Length: 506
Image (cartoon, rainbow, N blue to C red; front, side, top):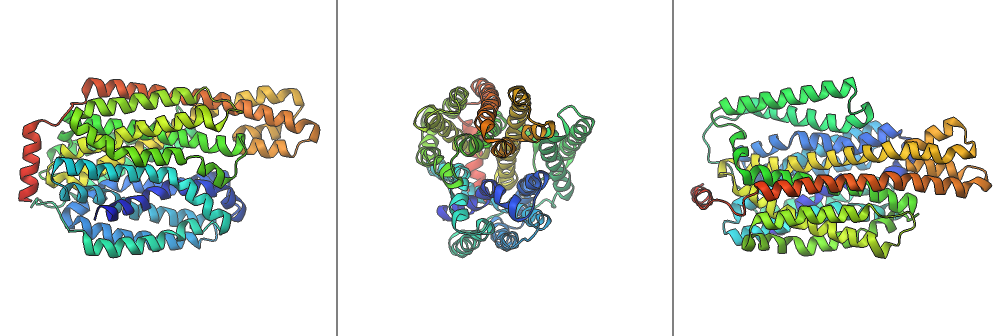
């Protein structure tokens, strides 16, 4: 049954990254603008993150297997819609529906896993496999997308989901037992609405803030709205009998610090992927598939070591393993910050990717286990949703912050380097918007200037790339310091015993 749960996670996570490699083809086939391309990506992430709490709570109430199975069916149907979309608007709508259904799959899978595996060692190994699948999916998305796009049309990256969904639903029906919360309290509908609204507002603000400007009036209003919704949600849950999420669990250092570590890990991962996929294709000139294949060291290391770190955390404690992971990610991003446009793949780049994957592997499973062990059986679905919301918030914030740091350095540097070549102002403005645009502008310049303009664009890209990597390293370092200071090595014995007894009775 564990492979079935892992397969369901693979499906919903890989669709977070597989679409990125198709963006150039989508821009050509659907005549999508830059804004349209952004929303093709974000239309999936926004409802996915916003509805995770609802998905977890619904699984707790009516049955986690039931919710996951029906959500998988919905995911398959909406994948078909996406594959045959003939306009940008249709694809954005289909992607949003895919994100809605994915939000009901992800928390159910981890809650089912935690319910099934009662032995601490077995649970650690199972969460290790689950975490490895999640991390592996992020890395394999560009590879799978690149391979499909070399032979088929853009819709193939969505249509490939359908046979996997069918296999997962059939096997899940036969192998996975159903479970739900033993709580007799009425469904916390107000908490679901308010909690989902707070998360959706937060993610939307993170997505839009770089476009608006982090300190723009629109962004400031959005920050305030997000904070107000979050505060109202906390106050409501504190006063509700049988809340969807007992927010008092955040007082538990294993829960809150574990969630923080997951958020920081995915902040760094998604920020790095955002940069390195452009580096491979636009600076070093690799094809989509070749760029994807070059992420294999990350994927292989992640798959091989995540379960090992999960077991190691049982032996030497969560604090040591998770802190090691955050500091390893710090070192990886510091190393990546010294990359140059002409750097060899078999050098700093591959070493930093392996170190990054080792760091993430030592965070995901132990931190997820710390979060889930802090919960009672009534809270498994909602707690799993919190675990997944932190991933989404961390990853979305990683792209937004790292991307903003990159853009703030890239554009001025490009203008400085290109000013000597009398490039018309409107072409400079166009090139300053993205490295892809700069490559396009340079390729249409007079042949005598093409090489110099391309070299200037590469230098500008690396100026932003390097500082953005250092920024991600700083975030990882701060996370590591917090983990050392606040993350307990193990769950309190009484707390874990209470969980095991309650789970058995449930």
